[in-house]
Length: 432
Image (tube, rainbow, N blue to C red; front, side, top):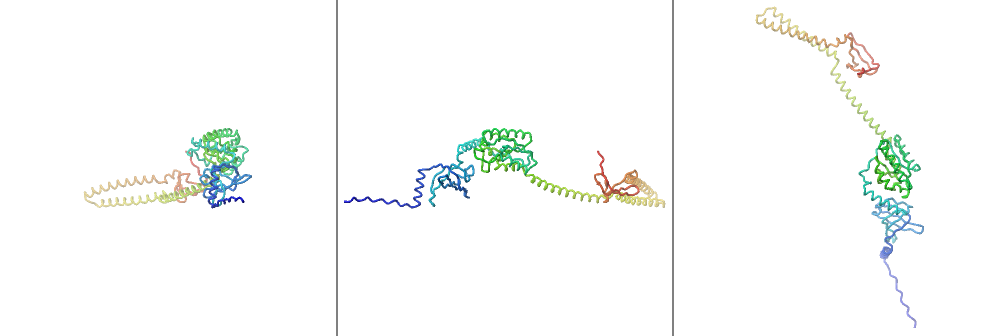
């Protein structure tokens, strides 16, 4: 009798969602957390703040997602081709069944130890107040001189000099050369800065640039030196640091008064463009000229009005003499009339009154004569007879000062017997 075969159990039938969740749970237990090293490919940053990319090597690749919270903690901007180390957890994106790595932290590969040193030094110096925004100063827009610390072989030197010549060729530039990479670089940078500090204290320069081009964290490591950081914060004048590219950060950047994204940007921050100043001066000059011209016009009108009210002195004297003559004529007529009445014979009382009146009239005549003599003494013609002349311009205004004349001006000189037309050639003043 044949042996009966054992029935084969059927495999479990999964729902897709349940299977994805089971795989995710298995990955979480088996691998997470996971650290991966690879090259970034297809990096993109979404409007939400999340970042998406792939990590790959010669044998494979894995999709990665870095959510906004983790992305906000990045100290640099990842780029395609960067070799990085990430820490995260494996997960399954259930809508597509894709395996992905949720990245919690990311740093340049092979630079882990240096990067950790950088973060520790940054935290310590920040706690000691070296990065305090309250001590940061604004560079002068019109410096007397600019000091530049960099390497003679650095491309940054050419970029900075070119930018300064283009924007402010009138500003003197003092170079303090030093190595910007290698073990000896921090000491040379410190020495170069200290030399510029002495010039700054003497008033020769009032802005300092510390610059070099971009590179890896190892290339820029000299600018993460603690002694250099403490030297930077001792600068007597504003110091602008332009080290690396826009995404590169060093301890020197945090200590400087101003951090520039590139060496060229540092030069542009150090001095306002000459054309900007000239344009501002031209506008100010035009405004001042207009204000002065308007003021002079107003004062000229007021002077003309005053001259018209004053009139010519001789004309005023003539009018006063006419009035005086009329008064004298009336006085003489009154005296003669009174005398005539006296001769016709009035009573004794009337004669006494008449005598008193005559005495009063005679006294008035004397006062009038004194007034006439004083008025004659004021007559400018008496002065003219002594050899002086009265100068007036064509409008009849009296000219008393050489400062009121100018070459080519027409004047009239009044003498005792008439007027003489004159033309001013070269007025001069009598020194006091």
